[in-house]
Image (cartoon, rainbow, N blue to C red):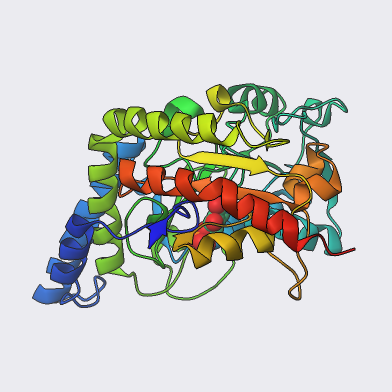
Length: 377
Ligand code: PLP
């Protein structure tokens, strides 16, 4: 299989698998006896390693079970902590469902929700000045999961900061790909997910400043600063830390390598009539290419590629088997019909030049066949 869906999940790195396996023998890190203390030491080593790689203090590192969980804790927990003073939540039109749906849930719970739009290239802006007045929390992603568009975070954070509003950053697509320094960034909380950079699936990270801290969503034994109760998944934390260490060590060279591969893909894609690249490469992650083709359904494109042994995605979930245009692309103002014919091709650390050549050799034919299959009305 030629795999072009690394933004969904990527292969576990051998160093992470080995670290995970070794740590899987460990018991409860809260145990007061020798094996418990050993487990606690290993967990704290992983926490320190993560903190040193992401520019924060170990106490600011909270292990969770997913990026989705980290996003939920930050958004719901911060709103709960501050809603008596400020009942407003500010977010963006292009957030991943983990934030987008959570923000809608908060609106159902009585929060006032303000959603910032994006430019035609996919960058958040604030024409209504939502950032000029205090809110319970502002949530803005660092890079979009469909287009890879890197958002103007320093501006968003500076403006929210000026009103004393905490900012949550969904950095799930960025951690392990771009340098992250939590303290320099100045965000209040930041979410990441191990399986996006070669760690185990089912382990997430929430970086959380000491104050203002989000209220916990689940209540129990008070682990992880009381923000995320439950016996900590030590092996998961260790595997995540090992993957992050390798991803950060290889980051600069890897970014150059995949950027070259992406350029080859762009060169090939732009020879296909009517193709529209949805975010300019210079402002996107080097791993993401989001392209729409006219007169084709995304699910036909995926099926044609799959038949040739290529795994790719449309970038948007299909509801009840009906191919729908991505709400991210619609927010960018892409025409609904064109947006339905979209491929998200994402590269990762295992992607080879042969993979890219293979895709290039099959892409134009897959597009033609999908166009021949026609569009649903
Ligand atoms: N946020 C973004 C931007 C993502 O891309 C994803 C996963 O696709 C998530 C959050 C959710 O992460 P997880 O799969 O670990 O729950």
